[in-house]
Length: 408
Image (cartoon, rainbow, N blue to C red; front, side, top):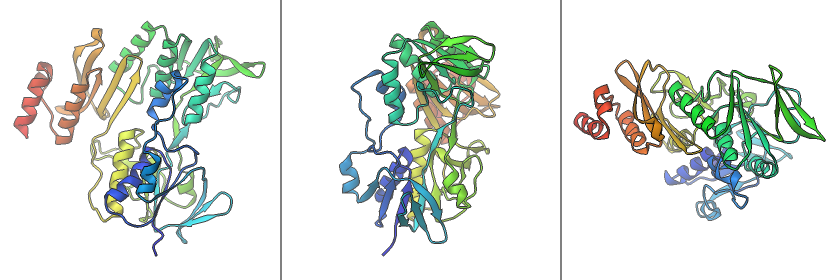
């Protein structure tokens, strides 16, 4: 009897890996381990609809019957202490162990901690799990002032949501612009102006030196320049750290994440890794990346399942991302690393435009605000390896579709 495959991590990547194993005809045991007690759920809504609706519940990735019907042994509330590679076993908290033939590490990432005085005060919250979102929802219902530390997607999504609910919101970002790690400067500047127009105060190039408390609860954030920002709720969104400890302690290669090849194998062939925690050489840019997106997590999980069932194809999915910040639906496809020029089409004044990024004559990314058709066309062009002329981009979607069809 085989020990089967164990998947550690029950987020988007882990659940997709379990589902894809069955879709690929894998008939061995599949065990899915999650640390939370919840049925695995969609995470993107947590920073938006969930925190503004007191009646909202987590949206399951799959119904409970899916796991039973596909013989997927979902085990919530478990913590893996150690990987015994020699014995091919997982040691669990409490002393139990589980044997495996193959292991998929989908351990994800955790919020980066804030190394300042007062970071442990009640009312200081990072968002990663549904319990955090419940706490934000509860605290925001009775507060007036919110400070968001970090100008990335999650921080700005929460800032827009809470500002729309009537809270006074200040965003503090250490870099000189918003969304510096995830979008190009034109989009970051546009988001900044749009949020400012909604009444969100934005401080870039600014850090917080300490958080102050009153009666055992956070009451203010104090900037390095000495400004005191009132806050009954402080959201910490200063990035994430990949959960590599389990793999690292087992001697699996680590490099800004768990290092994997183009088939999602780690340095130990029977162990694979997918999702936010996996670091790999990207086929499109030639650089090493670790992507934090639902698309990347699920596409890698599908490939890992194919690898386990004998597939030999390499990971070549075009990366795409999205974020809903207030009335802005941001959609990004490709990676802007290496881009040296861009072309904007559409109407920024109407909150609908796209930015096409080129490296020389090569299209490398398309970033859109409320232009979903541009995004979908961008995905098709990048997947086909097609780079349109700037003239075709300027002419619009019909010209781009015709050029893509002609090239195909």
